[in-house]
Image (cartoon, rainbow, N blue to C red; front, side, top):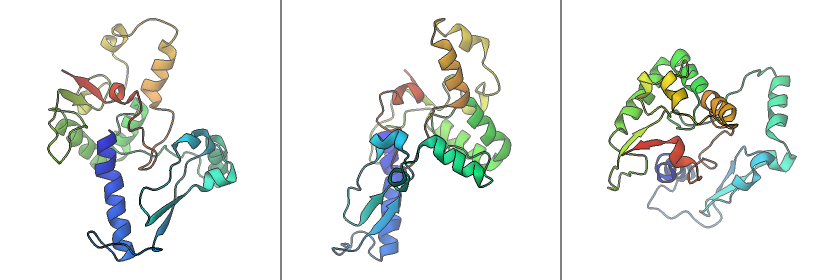
Amino acid sequence: MQRSTGQYKIKPIKEKVRELLGHPYPQRVPRGVFVEQWIGISVDEVHRAKDADVAYMRNRFPLLEQGLTREDCLRLLRSRGFESTPKSSCLGCPYHGNAQWRALRDTSPQEWEDVVAFDRAIRSGNARATAEGTPLLGQAYLHRSRRPLDQAPIDRVTAHEWAGRQTDVFDAIADAELEAGDADGCSPWACRSGAPVAAEHLTLTA
């Protein structure tokens, strides 16, 4: 996940920024020429706010400046008529819950086809593989059931899944996460990449 974030999100953004500045790679961006990039990280996740690693980009966090929490943002959106605002994430994010997969399938057929194709493409390896030649290892699936996305039980929890779970006090939490996905949103600059649970969410089999 960490490498895929850099390859598929951060690198293209930097390339576009250079293009907008009129200094595409390999040209050198002159000193003092930069873009100010506003990133929507709330105070709930202040630990994810980081400075840019290049001089031609400067990160700014307006929600932090205003002291806004995630709930503050949702309340503000509702007051402006945006009753349902989805979490930000990549189409093929392995942190999606069943509700997000269903919404994608039922409301965006073309995007659903794209993500099903992506899921099929990683079957011979996981997202740590790179265009530079890092080998694909094992089998990867976007859905936690370890089934192809277009066959995954996104409409219900199967008996097989229930049987495979431990019956303890954490089951209710696991059920909620399976349905709703990860509690946090995502962005190129605040992805789940590198988090300890990343391997769990991008299900990998031998």
